[in-house]
Length: 132
Image 1 (cartoon, helix red, strand yellow):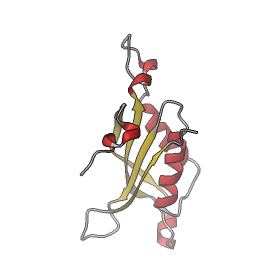
Image 2 (tube, helix red, strand yellow):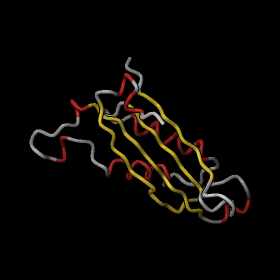
Image 3 (cartoon, helix red, strand yellow):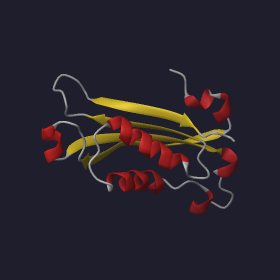
Image 4 (spheres, helix red, strand yellow):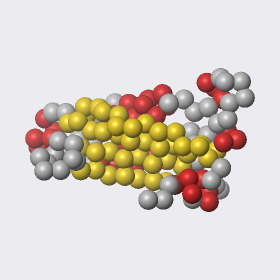
């Protein structure tokens, strides 16, 4: 599998990630899904140019803080019930791309408890910021 870092627009980037961030949220289109929370796992990758993320003084303000990923997800979840994982991923991607240092982002969500015969069902979105 090719790494996104091999993409020409991302070769000068570092990849930050948040793996298997587990949250309980109201998500789904079915009536039974609207009555309670479901477990959802998030995986996020941010691609940040090295020129904007290489610390010179070993200070947090010189990089993109990992808290940004968790806080961005929390802000979206605070808006209430979500019908589709596609909508959730799109919204989180858009919010993360709004960060001035982030050039590209990949977000995936997975609902691990939907079917007993598989690890889970989910969605993944990858987007590179327009350089306009």
